[in-house]
Amino acid sequence: MLSGYRILWIMALFDLPVLTKAERKRANKFRLFLLDEGFSMMQLSCYIRFTAGKEQAEALTRRIGRAVPDPGTVEVIWFTDKQYEGIQSFRGRASPTRPGKPDQLTLF
Image 1: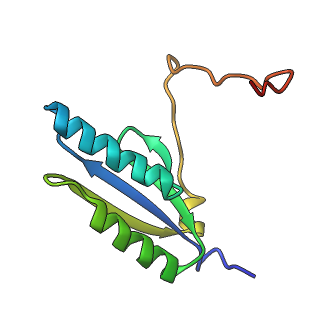
Image 2: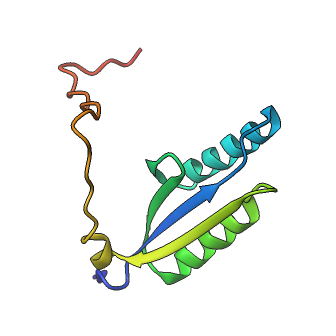
């Protein structure tokens, strides 16, 4: 059984320049890399992913390090599932409402 103290979450926080078209392309490529690696967007430059343990987290961190565009800064934070339980999210009153579930599944 997996322990809440062994399961790790990885948070990738990045600050990439987006002044030129080439910089925006590199930043978007990095963002798509994170999504392809299984990350979910928490905020504009903050992505998070669940991992089963330290070995998986280390391998994923190395892949992130190799994918960082130049110039750019990426910070990677690890924390346990128990620590993740303590995250509190707040949204302002003006934040958009989430769309409801569709009544019928649309394929095409």
